[in-house]
Image 1 (cartoon, rainbow, N blue to C red):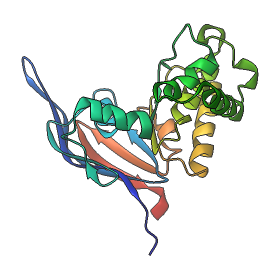
Image 2: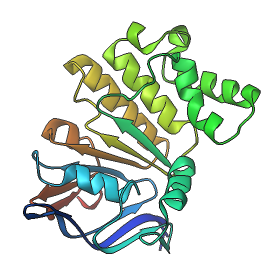
Image 3: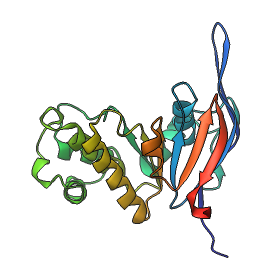
Image 4: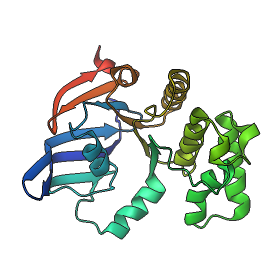
Length: 232
């Protein structure tokens, strides 16, 4: 039997917010993310998608339940320890791109390696290679304001991939793009997964979600349905 490595597991995870009233953003969510997975988390606004992303990607901690990363429970780790794991093991792509305006495309992609202490020569070599792979060779010295939406998202994808992460989380990655640019970004994700990258896309758009191999439908903080195309 073929062994597939489990990268992330959520066990009965709850996330509650306490204010004037208690809001349960996640209600007993259990899910595993395996190496090579291409997963979509699909649900309407307010369904718990973003909260799921924050917990699964180690940006936040659960109120109840356990989170495992590569077989080790990480729910109890300090913010600094979680930040260290994220920096080396997890890539992020956001709807708003989150590029630094006064840095070129090349510098934006180099940034994660700079934070980790890589030499300038190694940073530049890796970033140039990644940007060229994503079709941005002619845009490496452009600032975000000089790039189209689709080009900005490709820079963001390059930045997410530069540390060779175990998994990449994408939060509404086509939300700020026109339909043509959105399709190009989805095409990139499909190619990356075919190359073996593990991807998790959080979206409210069924058209975006359906490109994934597994779709987890989330509503009112609960996974209500799982569609696994690998089993069809």
